[in-house]
Length: 153
Image: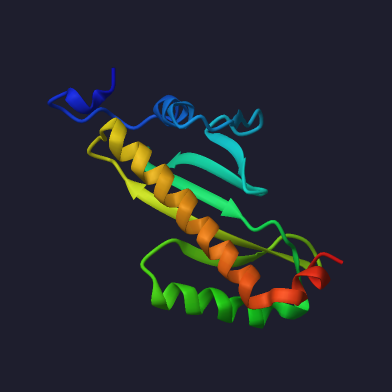
């Protein structure tokens, strides 16, 4: 049934991302406020899948770490993210202020399919995005160790 047998690449669409998530057996929900975003949870981390770019040809897989960090630890968290970014090609990781005193830590992978994509390419982008972002979150948890209990308080 897949489009992999087609001679031409098919345009990227959110429905194709939904089909890929379904093929993998992943549960997801549509975002009523943002119809261009699908939301899901993996290993207790919140993820978003969205199509972006001027030509709606970029698939973004974005995850948010399950902990919030006090703004007083921003420099430390930025250093950890920069270290990851310097030593790896993907995912891109960063810290973002979410409220007056709290920071969120994110990882994301973007795949450019402006020329179209095979089903297997969409599947691989999602799998790679999830596995590498989760690997980053796990590495943060290992680095911070016992300090994790203090983060959300």
